[in-house]
Image: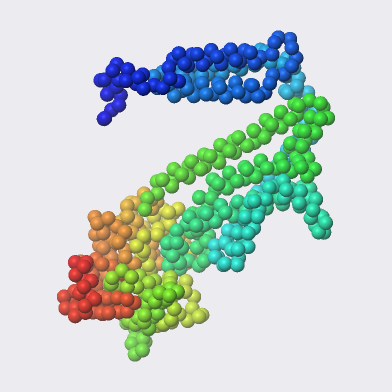
Length: 336
Length: 249
């Protein structure tokens, strides 16, 4: 079969009949449209009668959602319908479902603006929210700096290949990877004072985030060092470069190229975990939003905080993905 | 050690041993390499020829024995091995060019950082060397953009940039496609003509017959035979040598 397109036109109708003959029942049009009718009827019965204030049963809505997805899957796997038609069918159904919810649910749409996007409330909350934002930034940057220094040192020590040293480094890495950050924060903030170590809430937060992140950073750097081939170090030695020059001129530049995408990804993950610091009385972005929500009895500050988180992390996540893709592409080019 | 102090002695090896844990790779090698001599090291795989070469600039740490480079005991505890290595250029089987640097940057790296010469001078010297290996137009290419033969020629230029007294070649053509072997051997042949002291681990019979002054034939960690190419190739009396040559010819 050289060209499947050509062969299709050649055999034409008989091929089509052949296909239809093998289509299981779920792909027949009568089944697809029958299923659709049942779904719509079920959806209509799910809605509360007009004027009643009762909320709809969540379990039945979930079942409706699952059935909708199954139907979409049946449509999409139908080889005989055009791609365009399948897309239109599925998406118009989802739009109809959304419209039904909008039209018949008990949500108070008229008050949406007041409840969720209330500019006045956000203005009132603004000073606190900004304070929270700077605190979040401080936590994220502090943890990033600490984890980079500690992680890099651990990776360098690990490269010495000393059995005893390695044992402790592996234990460190395993411990902090296994330990939930929130538990670590509470330990540092609430338990360490009993051992005579009293840290401010911010310091505890940075320390917990940094310790956790450093475990990952050290593994990332280790992988980076390992990616530099042994022959590179031999070539540098043979040229008379000192060990420090070899590290600076040959190993690090090569390792950094490998390390930067996962490192950025790790910083983003660590920055997202700053929200956990709200559990040890730090007024960071989330806690600021929550407290303002309670104070003003309006969820707008919380919505604003959500938007702010997304505005910070969406570009960074994209950026990390882009770096990763770029590195994979450049690796593919290398031949040996 | 009668000839140790003679000026024409470049390398002297006395009773060199190398052990990797239980494996006794070199079992007492002694030899002398003179100025401008081209010595080919041959032998079946596992005979220790690469290890022998790598011991001579201490890329592998010898277990025991003495090595003198121009009369200097490089096994002495006070010796700065990095200084010694600047006098010995090394070319590897797998080229080992630095992939993050261009061809000319690869060549300039060691002269600028070890010899501390200026960027301008290093560039001039580097370009002259690239010219010599026929790759002047590839100066700004990265290793990944070069063929195997071109990479190996850049690697030779990189080693020469340090203006070494001695050049080691550890199977320089083994990783190359057949059509690229010639270009690398040409460069090596020219170096031999210019009087470079060379030690070459290789099985390129044509090159050895033409360019080598001597062949060291190693088997099981010992020098089995030491003679001119003619003696070894045509008049060998050793069973191991004849057997090996029969296989590779």
